[in-house]
Amino acid sequence: MTRSDEMRMRPDEYRVMFEIENHYWWYRGLRTLLKSLLKHNLATAPRDMLILDAGCGTGANLEMLQKYGRAIGIDIAPEAIGFCQARGIPKDRLATASVTDLPFACDTFDLAVSFDVICNIPDDVGAFAQVARVLKPGGYFIVQLPAYQWLWSMHDVAVGHQRRYSARATRAKLAQAGFQIERVLHTNALLLPFVIVQRLLRRRTLERGNVIESDLQMELPRWLNALLSLFYRAEIKLEAHIDSPFGLSVIAIAKKR
Image 1 (cartoon, rainbow, N blue to C red):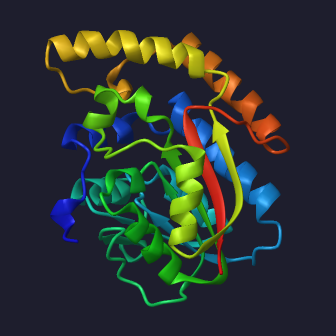
Image 2 (spheres, rainbow, N blue to C red):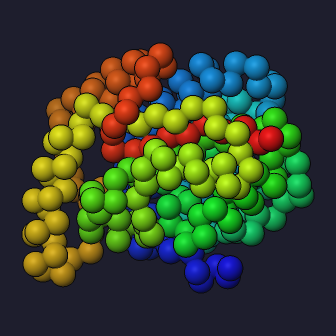
């Protein structure tokens, strides 16, 4: 597969991501969720891990991961790497590369994470296999993917998604790539009914005008952003102990065999 086969976010979406990633409820929630998963599911992971952020975007997750070891981020988009550098992430911890062709030796990393990136790749099993290749035996992989194909909207088009996922498909594709599945859950269950209504209504408006625009383009009042953050944090506390059977995203924790 060549780099051109991988769907990319629209360039303006990287700018939006960079501008809102530190305060927007969705991104703040993702970082809180990632911290929770690391605490409760990777208690035996080595300190000072070598970590791969496979599709680091504009770098807020990558910046946070530096607290857990040496974290290296790759992204196919030069725009994303540029925003990571603007965030202050050193050049030696960044690479412009595709998840389907990782520029690292086999058995290199202790942990890999990938949030809403492999859903952009036609050969997603091949991408999962590349992550497995560069992980050490027993290394962990935390991956988030958008849930439910019936929830497809212009948001998916704008951010370059190829598909959305079920928990069953996620398990099957990770197993096919050589992973042992440790845990699969959903996240953003509490907000799912509201997002369903919002997506369906907005889909009609955007499709009528042939407008391709992500949900991140919508400006939220501060009070609403704070309320959504509160809901998300409350749910994350529950997910430390309970695997939600439904939600906006699928999260899998897998181990290289």
